[in-house]
Image (tube, rainbow over all chains, first blue to last red; front, side, top):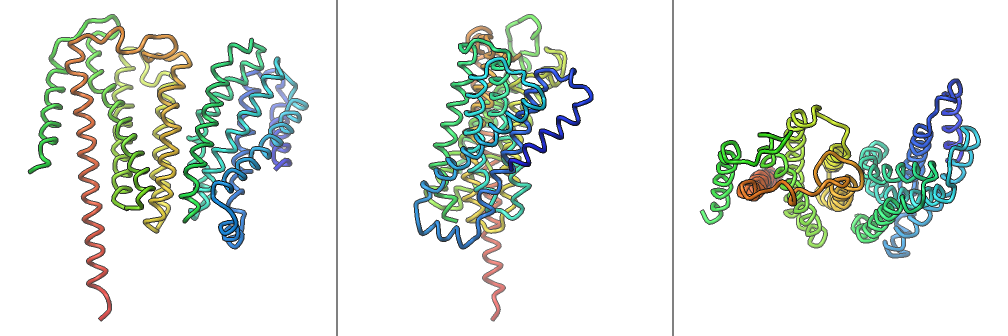
Length: 196
Length: 228
């Protein structure tokens, strides 16, 4: 997955390399988040479909569904934090760093990594029950993840411009609350998915 | 006959809304002019849609608690009629926007949110169609439906308020109730909401009944065609 992110960033770098000076901050920011979004969908789609049937039954006997969804969310959050962090460092390295306020940008990356991970984990669980899970994963997750993506891009833009933190309070609170809602819902709903 | 009264009420309310909506007195505001009559259709349709989708979510919850397929039928049909209202709301809104904002699809966060909301529910229908087994389909679709509604509400009602939007109630504009709703409008607006909700329920009820009849006939067919 790391290779996926790095090569995507590199492809973007090469495609933009002729006109680097035309790369406005908005394009820079949006491009980064789109790369992260696709990396997240690809990374997390595997979290259920990759497990073999026997192992799922083993888990089923071993522990409660709540424990499984929470551990999957935590694991995926760490994967996403790692991917987004390394992705950002590499992206800033090749495309030039345009961020004004690194602290806020880091918070933004952390919040969105956790949010993406928790939304996509539940969707991956849903999609893995169907037959053509790869297509279904994309169709189900993109509209659901869009509000989060929009908030993230707005917050990241504030961080890039180096605006005062009080300006972005709204966005941080909204992102946090969406994260919380999504995690609670996954916790409550997953047992029903797990049974089938 | 005992369940007829709300259908009669629905027809009466909608007749009242159409006549009073087109002929009744309305306040004259700049830019809006006579197009304010669209409040009875566009705004009321959106509110009715949210109500229907909320009801659909409640039925999904009930299904998860009871595993009774009837609840899932109701949930899916309510979501379908909500989706239908969403598309109608988009169309009526774009007619309105064409006259007041000068563009049938201005780049407005609420419009984009609505489009994404419709996509979410289309994805719900797609998810339903990709399962063969009924119990399994019902359970997984219910989980997605609850999840979708929880995302849908911030998308339509919270996010646009944080940014600049052309709609009232967003980005510092005052909300609907406070500045341009007078009593003439209210007299038609509230019945309009109730009327549209009842009509949506009616659609859903008919489709649920068709579904149940089909299921019964299938079961009969299976029973009669058993090998002797």
